[in-house]
Amino acid sequence: MIYVFPLIHALDVDRLEYIQRAAIEVNHSGTITKVEHLKEDENIDGDDVVHAHPNEFLVPGFVDTHSHAPQFSNIGFGFNLELLDWLSQVTFPTESNYQDAQVAQIDFAKVVEATLSVGTTTCSYYSSLHLDATKILAATCHSKGQRALVGKVNMDSHCPDYYKDESPEVSMAQTKEYVDYVRNNLKSAIVHPIITPRFAICCSPELLEQMGEYLKDENLHIQTHLCENKGEIDFTMSLYPNDESYTHIYANRGILSDRTILAHCCHLTNSEMDLIKQYDCGISHCPTSNFNLRSGITDVNQLLTDGITKVGLGSDCSGGYEAGILQSLRDASTASKALSIFHNKPTYLSLEKLFYLATLGGARALDLEKQIGNFIVGKQFDALVIDPLTIANKSLIDSSKQSYISPLDRLKRNFERWLFAGTSANLQAVFVDGKNINIK
Ligand code: GUN
Ligand code: FE
Image (tube, rainbow, N blue to C red; front, side, top):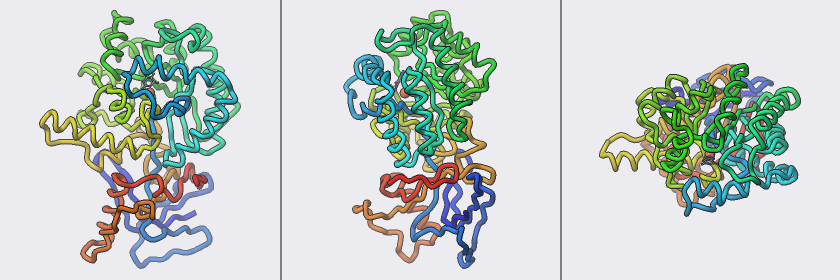
């Protein structure tokens, strides 16, 4: 297929490319084989050519670097609580329901449909601790065509008896069985397993050590939470008094690698940032959740300036109340402006950086940059078709038609406006791995 569209994508942290008329050629495997810049009067036609409707443009699919599928039924509840109380009073009781495979089957289908319909073409999911539910989530992503990393949560400590892995050994045995299932039964090109220790509080030292041992021989993705909330950090350090910092707890047990995604990171010390840089880990910035649970404000602009660029956005549903990454992008903007006001610094996250975080930065954080994140030849075609001026945007008057605005400026204005004032109603089509996913 050849898609003739205006196109916007991130080439690096500070670099967006706008192409007024691009022709993207995609082969049968969903790989981008050619990207041409067409002249305004240059025509290409054929059965396999798709042209943009007026105003439409193409962007890479959104990457959600952190979400919890068994928490979607809680979206919007519990924001009078902070993290540890929210987990014990709101989250664990809900996640425990996924013991029932039928609940998982019904709910996870809705979760994947919901996230695809807001433009999340790739998602890194925490399932519950249940083996069957986790297999169901992976299979659901595969059958519905969403690119995903899916992990069975490991937790054997400081959690209620009704929601707890029986022992480190059982936790590991089930994790290995799950990885084996995805690799040998599901055999998906787009869904992969990810090792998912919930966070240090919920993992005994024995469990973290056994995970580290397993990871020595396996080239697997890993995800966990880090330095989200001050009370959490204090409790964590009381459980691991001999480790230099929260980040060292993971480093010392083999949990950190260039395939590790660390969620939140609101309160990192300089030595922890150095460690994250040394191991080349990814960071998932979850501003909506950080505000809702009053956890803190991650200074992402500073991370990017300090050379930590494997950073993406995470909805962290249901710490976050919105599945779509547009909300995370807007809250990342607000968070960076709040820091800029409080610290009396003129710098905050630019439009370029915000869109980078939502797409290419997310791909880098998940160690999927070779596959996705922008429209570079050799990558897979994960894309969104946006109509920025659908009837859904009743309050938006098309001011960009004024004659002094060039076509390129018009594209830039429509893009910016969609990012800050658009909705999922602007999504006309969602492509994953070259396939047009039915989202209506
Ligand atoms: N830390 C440990 N578990 C969780 C979780 O489910 N959500 C958030 N936001 N933080 C956590
Ligand atoms: Fe989370």
